[in-house]
Length: 550
Ligand SMILES: [Zn+2]
Ligand SMILES: [Zn+2]
Image (cartoon, rainbow, N blue to C red; front, side, top):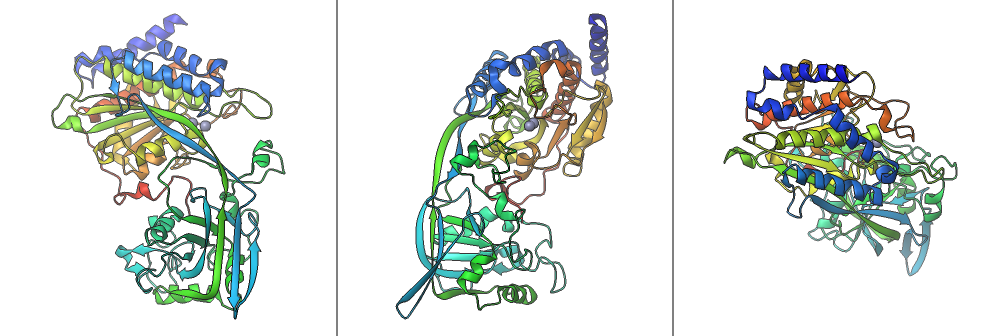
């Protein structure tokens, strides 16, 4: 087999001469399957225990990667050094959680406590504590100058300060009942983001926020697949149950990174909450009236107070992205960056079976490829004009947390990152084929992959199924960064203990690394500049990928 491998290597070297300046060929030639495989084997070894973010095995991987970037001669990629540290925050629901609606008329008070999980859930991004205050209804809770909509405009100044604000989910007239498309129709704009709505209410001094399933878009009675379950935070006992135990409630991941606190208690509620608040009002008609007139409605709800108690047990665990940079050689263009990244974390040890999930393909393969690209760039006789940033993300398996952290607290300005390449699972299935993700978002960047694919011996497929939210490219898209992702497809060992190092194809990983190198070099040398994504400024503040939908 050795002879075959050498033949493939020299072919790749020959092929490279056409497009690359001659003095880059030896750097390109450092990308080799037989060098990549030991990296995959180490990262996927039992000693690294499946590299779950926040565990010892993940830390060892981070140390290994930062040493390797440093040994290659690359500089630290953040002010803190090679590690961009952040905390993983795991929240579990504490028994004190409470949402009570109180009516006081003529000195007499009646109260109705809603059932957590059935009628409401606290948002994981909510502040912890207690708030009890009078209630103001504020429409959709949206302030969108570009659509001429402000749900707070008709309230007196300071009208929600110290209050509990009640708003609907979704956006005004998204079904177009009043004619031409309003907002983006059924498409979600950033204003529909639950976090953004919480931010609007918090910035006006509200103590609490209840976002209610809007009657025009949700069944009056929630069913188990309703949106509440997506936000369900497990209790300590439930968390200990096996993932497939029927007693374990369906719930979204309850782990997030330590984002800035929003400063408001926020909850999601079913329409049962609206009935408890004012059972005599036709809330659906109210929504339809706003939609038909395209005019917001806001008012204080008389006689009512709402008490919100958000209680979580919070566990913080440190983890880190590993970042390294090759500074560009051009005095002007070096302030711009090409990013090459992939996540190095995986899912760790199964709590029930105690089996290690080695994650060789997912994503020791991409991690090893990124490192090989970094080593090749470091071996160039002269750095390209633009700087090249290499990123090994943590927290991907918990919901793209590491890349999201990077996008929210970028070590270099996001608008200076001219292109990003993501590698997640690049080592399995047919050796001569790989998928590229992002053609509809970043056609000109993907065109560069098309251009160089045959040079490394790949036939490229498009994978529309692996879109935003599936990997770290989702975070970068939300930051407006043109991003394409390489992905060799799923398989029966995906997220299983059988995803072992001996099953990956080292030469395929090398090809993915070579292709990434050629595309990254093309952009880094200043010859190509992909068009930026059409995302309004600062949306990453409002959106967490894959978490906030209508
Ligand atoms: Zn992955
Ligand atoms: Zn995975």
